Amino acid sequence: MLSNLRRYVAVLEGLAADPKGVFLAHPDRIGNAKYHFVIAIECCIDIANHIIASENFRFPKDNADSFTVLVEEGVLPRVLREPLRDMARFHNRLVHIDWEVDDERVYEYLQTVLGDFHSFARAVAEHPWR
Image (cartoon, rainbow, N blue to C red; front, side, top):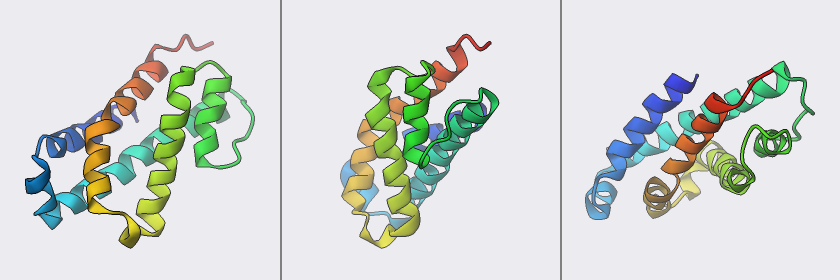
């Protein structure tokens, strides 16, 4: 799952390299970014829930809470809690009310959150599992 996440984030990084005007002028790039955000965030949620189940951590209330559980259990650093919870909420907006997601917000996300994916993957990969 981590290798899939890295592949999805690599696509997002390629899209993030576009100047804002170029990105916003191409609906196919916007759609590509939205799709890759959805699958990258779903991948993080899947990884989190897999860890929660395998380690018998408390059951999360929702997808955003999955990241809180991993922070509580010391798998993720506290600094990632809110960015990852926000990412889960962004995922829900993209999946359930895509028409309300502003394309400029998608570009802003490309510029600001990709490092959070890397931090998540690194924390999971480097955690000293029992």
